Length: 248
Image 1 (cartoon, rainbow, N blue to C red):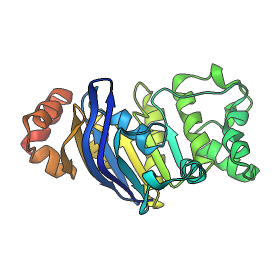
Image 2: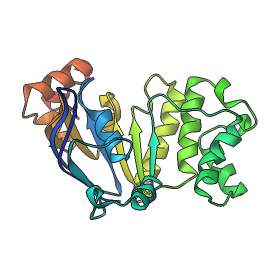
Image 3: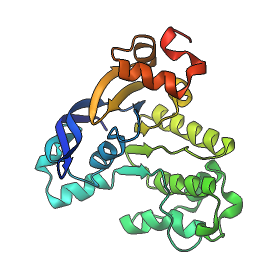
Image 4: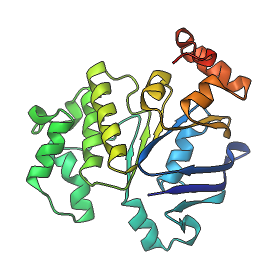
């Protein structure tokens, strides 16, 4: 699913969260949003995910403007989007019941082999009958990811999916994100982790105070920053990487 953002603005009271955003996200790669806290990354993801509405502007999904959606079309597009939140939303019941929730809600077939494969992929095979809310933080994040993978959406939105996770969980989730991009799914990832940005590559967008300051490849952003804001952000986040001075 190709996503185009046109002249998008979002305000709450007099606070301008997003200002005249114009972006393109393409399928088959990893699109990365970076920037300090309060930059507008989560707000942008929520609008793309059809969880919030902008004050003005539009999101275009494969050439279809969100402004022209009927209620049914909005629901149909919403069902093609998988959102992995920074703080996992865990439902009552077992791990298995959490995973099949989306299938039952969408009235999709429950395929035991597919469920087994995804549970194994996220490393929760031995937790399938456990109470979901008693899982560790990393396990809950992997469960949330499994719940999204099982519905097989066209668009995946990741909001800081590996923050505060153990190294094993981080590696597991990163590998799955790579697989999604290779399968031509559209992946949009918000992160503060510049090591992760260098690892994923892809198309990168730097936001600050609701404005897209610069976008491009990791080489273009970190070797040729066009603003002091990006230079300061990359140096402050990981000065030992010396990103802005041409390291590889």
